[in-house]
Length: 496
Image 1 (cartoon, helix red, strand yellow):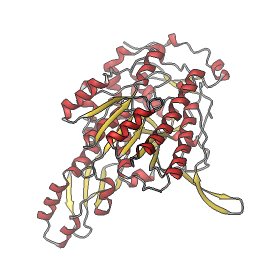
Image 2: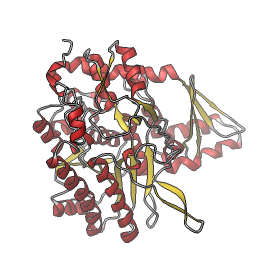
Image 3: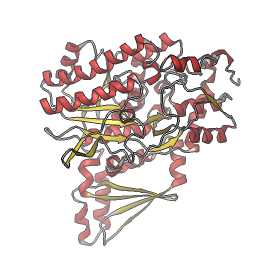
Image 4: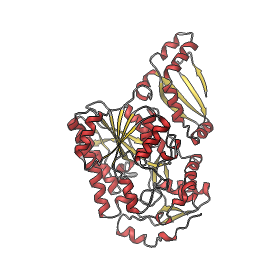
């Protein structure tokens, strides 16, 4: 790390080579941790600059500093630090009480650990429904995830920090939810507690009804509970890019709201039209309307995060102890596309590309999910302000191009299957993510070195894989089911 102070611009620039950053990330000393360590040691750094500076420029640091502009190049990362951005991005001075609904899940668990690691007081709420679905589908996580009690005890041992776990069903146990909010008095409530898989939501009528009942009731209960508890908690909801549909805007998809011209030439900025592609996505669209209503009617403070497809498995926190390992879903219902490809490539299974692979999708690494949540927590809307919406993505890629990247790395060919989904064979996707980037996010992009981390996890636990669960098992309608009728789950063979 090279540090230099400019006497003319009153800023500091940290230059780190791209290769070093990737190497450090592979060891789970991520760029995020470097940045956080810089911020946490704020007073030490300020004292250093006061000693080193003999000009009046030293006064520029008396109010603190934090990253405000992040630029990325092939050889260096530059961080310009200034006082104005400190309040928005600091990790060291504004610790919060945070309830995380769905904190036992794929995104919820690493986010809980990350926020605790940053010094926030974390309470996990989960009814363990995702674990019950494992039993229902007969398909466990590829990684051997521990019980919540073992997980939080392991975190206490490695970090010295406590995380409280509460077994509670947000969609059904309303009174307990209200009581919990009153007791804990959270600053923020992060809402992951929804059935998150589009294929599972289309599996049959039971799964469709469960997805609607669980997701929409849970979100409505949360709003009502915040109101009835009389706690001014900021709600941070993990939504999906799928609320927009794919390619329906005819250009760059803005962050939540879109400028339109109404009859008579009237200009208006409205909520982006919804265009869901599954029952799961439809529930996220209904969530969006609930947030809009309760913000307007009750002045709730809400941030809705439209997230892309999550990839990766472990984070700098989950790697600290085997008992902290995150879940890894590889099956046709819950396995996200890139993780499925990486698992299949590592096990010598042809990559399951649906249709032409021309679907363009947004991607984000699981580490960035946690970082985005903290940025949202640290930047809540004020009471009375409309719902804040961020597009939580790193980049967009066409599925067949992602498959080609994995095939090149693993030597496994792509297998183009009939598409079980009712969707366009090809689409473009241009998405704005300026808000998070302006608040300090330097997103992790698809990188073959990072692919290796997932591959290592797969190789370690591949004996836990059930190859009959790899092919798609949920179909959007009867026509799609008929087109996929030739798929034989027992035909999949893995390398031992």
